[in-house]
Length: 159
Image (cartoon, rainbow, N blue to C red; front, side):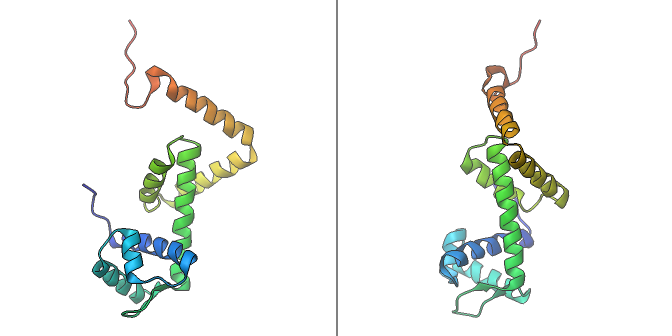
């Protein structure tokens, strides 16, 4: 069972999804947003109303929704955090892309600025020193592949 989320986290998901759909197709209809998020149209309508009240979305009944400048800024920042986290999880922790993406979606809302800054520093370090990053990935992959070190397995005590 998924834990309950605060409305602000849900709002970030809506804004991020709106941005992605807007970039592909322009203004977004309620049904398209509902399909993308996997929720009912009535839920989308209520959330868009709340986002419009906060000045993050321009939406009127029976019309398409569009992000405002403020909504776009929040959506862009959330999207950037998602990508940064997903890339770290795939490139440095060697998670498969689907698992990395699913975890990044949850993590993007809860990591504080100091952790995001450190992840950005890791990304800059890896870009500036590609051999060091490749060596890390190769060594970490070998570490994970060793039978006694596989995640979820406990190492037996030696006698």
